[in-house]
Image (cartoon, rainbow, N blue to C red):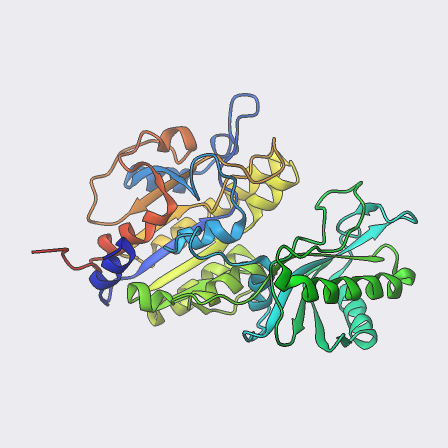
Length: 401
């Protein structure tokens, strides 16, 4: 038996409640001697860390900088090298689309290009969501089909959207039609296999027609597509771990990924307090909760050290409300590090704390990267978090005689 099969055979349903708090982009690097966590005032997380087991997790593996998709898969107990889920699928599921095996999805950005086709702004000045909706309606009215393939475009927040190509024989073996850097030329996609050639032709025909149609819509006068993907075959968290899971997240991609692994995505407001209130109101209905806080990652990607510190402090104030629910197991960690000094995701391990009544507390003084590395959990792959939570929730039978 594989390790995955063993774990599935040991999992059992109980009444214990598990909460996984994911602070997006939690880890950082020192600026004037301190990381963002070290600079933040986080008395609640610090007190909790003192009563917990602590350590560091690698989202994927040593030295690999993760995207949000694979890092979340690992947090949910799925090997990201085995279960590869494209960005387009996650975005589509996140806005509530129901996909079929004939659907090819991609995440899109409206962008600004100059007269030479050079990208001036990949995010089109972060146009308003209302403007995005207007442009999507316009494009949908202009382009409904390309070479016999149906096309649908769905607005997201600000400059983001999801596009779905629907028809038989579509392949996702395509390069991104997005250089992902300003100052580069806008480009089409290329097929990575012969079987995907027709699909690449369809996508590039759409891009050409869309660019022409968008000329009057400056600054949103271009379309960039990435994360071409089809829905994969992936077991649910109930099938894998006998859990009845729920997700509380505001951003579409995280909601989509949670839905893909069988979580019920709960409706919630936009604020951190809204998310915690949703957790409180739904606590009796499920035995596993994933709650996602986005702000530190956004601040880190903007290179705003002070704002990331402020975001961490805001999350810290939510911790007592979560603890008052008296979960049997509480884990606080991140999906990846986003140091403000790098303005991007990074390969650095994330701090983690695990709180339950079946542990030997580490008694560390602060929930920070350097303090957590002293904890007895050590440094380990994020893939092992769910088994640890199940064990501490008494949801695993004994292995072997």
